[in-house]
Length: 252
View 1 (cartoon, helix red, strand yellow):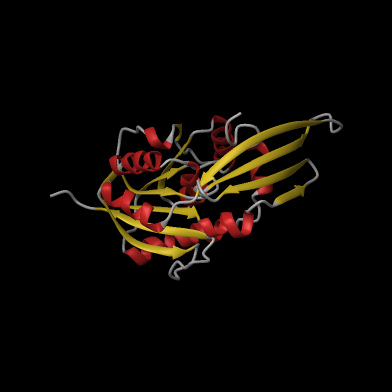
View 2: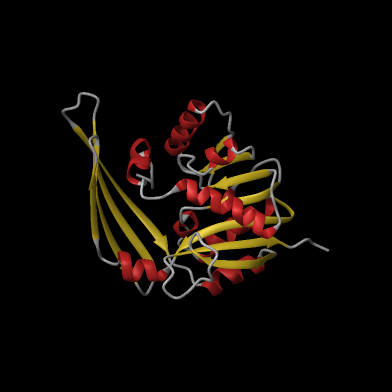
């Protein structure tokens, strides 16, 4: 089973530690700081729409792209509940193919870490480039090697709600810089007495700042800033998440 295919309906339940309104505000503050307020946005790796939907409610023309049909179905359900008509596309980020360009592409919630080969990261950046207008902005985040090695490492986590529970085991290969997540979910069924067990394996790679910068430059991007997570402080050695701001260079 592919990543996020088995638990889209309970994904938000176990991601409630993420303060999405703060993230959305940070994105808008980033645009203001760059002097680049977009009209059109692609949310790449949008998941269940936790960034896409608030941006649409704020008046931005935004579309969501994700590889998981189940996650997109949940995103569409949530959008309809808000009275919003948001286009969602089920596509691989490395092969994104839309018929237009936008002012800004976002890729958040460590979506790009799921690309475990540098060639895959290059392909994703190339797809982003193809969908940006000249001087367009690319904002994205990534989990860091420090987080994988020092905080997740070989640790196990568990959480439980009234309708579901999960067990999450981590294993970090320092040589390959790949973190393997084994996630086992128990999802309460409609009869309220039985649970469905869903098991998934997820893999994320830690990229160095130099690798990311090189990949951006090879695709015609200028790296503007690298911040420590969702603040405007410079990234440091013990940053758990990097936030990147890049701009597509205008071809002469």
